[in-house]
Length: 292
Image 1 (tube, helix red, strand yellow):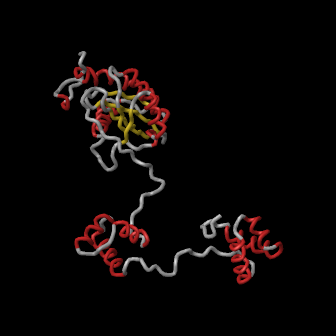
Image 2 (cartoon, rainbow, N blue to C red):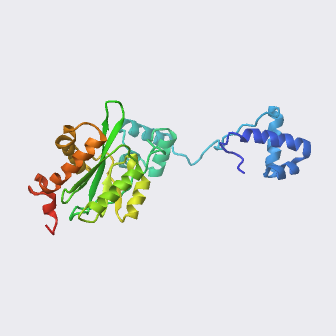
């Protein structure tokens, strides 16, 4: 049990322990509350001063720090941070060039103590750093996404899309709901239909492509990576396909799940077998397969 803690109930515990010690003795109270007799003695002394009210938690910060940074160094860190707005690493290098001897950890600690360091949100999803492979063959890298539609009555309709970066072979499905499980089933059906095996799929950071989706891809023998944050060109191929399927297919039918499914089933054979693509030298996706 720590003497100093941020637990909100500890002040009341200290008061109860001090009151118990007054009636039953220091050592009995120490055994009862699981602390040393010296700790109980301190609590009793403080309780007598405050009148057996909750004993507040005091700061354990020392009154003086002989090895703390000089005030001039702290002011130099503040001026450099406010003047340029750069990160701690840049501030450290700038101070070193000016002859201010300070470590990088001291710069970070000073900025953190003064509330001048931007911290990463603990609720933010971690981003993976899986290397992006070169699309050297069919299935080496595919991109998947979802297109959202709002119906006249306010309900939503979704279209899952997927494209192979090497051959431009594409697949799509209309869905009334999206989620990690639905995304995994979509990829599983695409794996069965595609004329080549999948090595890796890249998606954005939507909730339908969460960690559970990653694990399901592993079960299918497919690796999964998320696109880089604030890199708008990472998913350029699937975004272009989303626009194409909307302009050439979905915009021409009514916004219903049945109409979308019928239109997509008729459009995909044309897209993969007949439509010429400038990105692959005016070939069709099936012409990119070795067995064609």
